Image 1: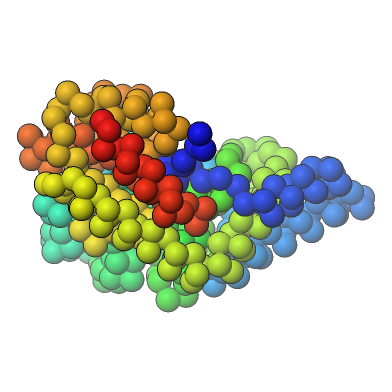
Image 2 (image 1 turned 180 degrees about the horizontal axis):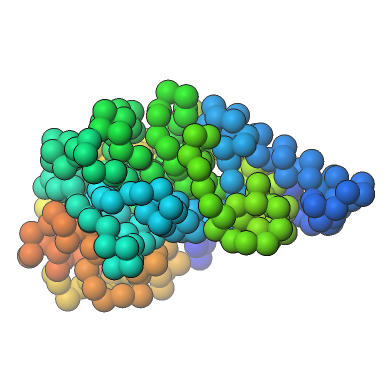
Length: 373
Ligand code: PLP
């Protein structure tokens, strides 16, 4: 039995070239990048080349990229920093954000008394941008935090439009681009957002490494105190092999962006049409969704909800109910709860998320397996 991985929104397999790069760095470039001897200089050079590679693909300056452990860390740091030291009094977000954002915002509300307002979610899973604009005003220093692509249903916000609205009201815009970065072109000269965060493991890079883009006019206090690493903003010896792996993964993602987007879009369409043909009454959760995420409401009884993932797992097929961080939970998805009816929320929904490593044959096996449940 060959295992089938259709949970690429949770994490992605590493590209072989990324593993090669990381092993090479682990073997040969063990110098501390802060050391002044040749070993240190060699690691420092990898560090800065990696930063430049990432910045080049985003069309920003290398100084605007700060390496972090992951996107969660970046989001916590940025949002806290804006409220604690940059005078933010109001946060506008939505209830369908990842918990990395939602729980950070709730904690800031508790700790600093910052006002929080949630943008209305439409019945199709998209955000109501008219409601968004109504919530903004020039008078209150405001931060907007929204994800580019929703990790559970794949709905997308128009980055340029949202950035433009934020600019109009002088609001700071932090964007969680975890699900989109490396999968769609983002040009930071064209898109005037202030902050973005990313995790390498979502674009076929290693876990435990990510980065934050901090636009150069934004003044930040350190998230960690200690050495001078990352301009003194995040002290601690850098994980060079992780950073080199992330940079390689990002470079390859951008190099293959067009053909992989096309390939994955076709796979999603294939899976969708097969599901429609085999399961009468199936509903897609979310409209105008990103090309690698398909979230469907299956026309099965409530009792089957728990069984489905278990049965698929027994057959070696990995899909998910929603966010991986919550998959152990019996609570319904906080994202689907925002726009599905009470009846539908009890029924089984599945998130199927694709990468360029998947094939139509795998989708056929998945559909056949689902039919037996
Ligand atoms: N934001 C989104 C949209 C995600 O999908 C995830 C991970 O699933 C995160 C943030 C958190 O990423 P990490 O756990 O790598 O920090």
